[in-house]
Length: 67
Image (tube, rainbow, N blue to C red; front, side, top):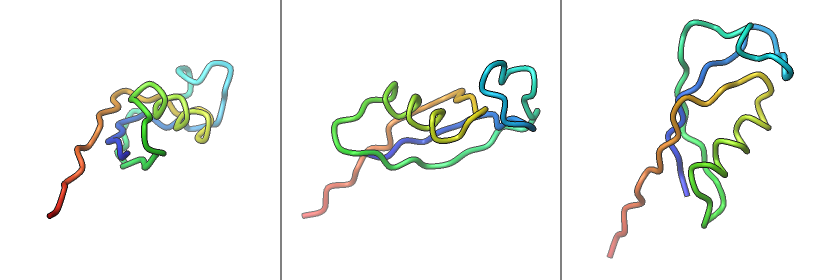
């Protein structure tokens, strides 16, 4: 599953109070996860892997089925 993630990345990785150190610019990436994950799972995994990042949006990207 792939998700479109929009997030703020902190200027300093502060896992206790990340909102204090937020960069004003939003960042965007695509995050590939194992099959069966939902947006909440992807958001939590992304924030865990990127300390200080705060996910603002996490949307599933539909797969194209080719025949």
